[in-house]
Length: 221
Image 1 (cartoon, rainbow, N blue to C red):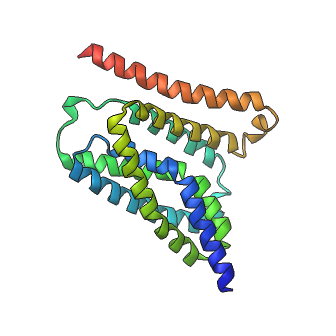
Image 2 (cartoon, one colour):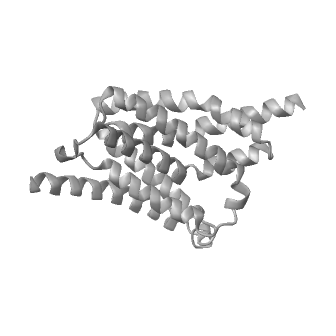
Image 3 (spheres, rainbow, N blue to C red):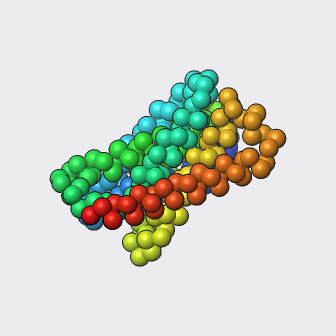
């Protein structure tokens, strides 16, 4: 019994590490415009709330599986987040630090909900209904996600192009979620060209839209 518990726990931790890369990117992107102290708060608060929400979602994962268009809605939400995160911050937006912190935390939590469906469902399967396993596995993964976001954030400050790459990764994840939507999956399942086309269209489209919006904003100033 203890061996089965440990094996399942290791599976859950592995799932979190493998599927947590996108989440680390979201955390880094959402907090990149904040001052250092606020940035750390956003990372810890956002990650903590996201993990809490994910525990709840994992517990009710069985019910989520029956909701039509769940993956499609999550994919669309993630596309919107990917586009917004690539936009440059306007100088006029420097109002209260608290507001900026709140926005960053909300972005982290909502992005985690939108893109964490695969993670939630995978963990639910590995846990075999054991809620203790779900909680322990997620808690062990928290430091990995937090430090991962800090490392990504450091490189984004040195190489701004990584912001566009990060948004592209989110768009790629969104495309995968849309393709996996059960209600429309039959359209893609036997059409590899259509799958690749959707991935390319959404990734290029989000990056291009973000770049054009930033260009128009600069010209309007």
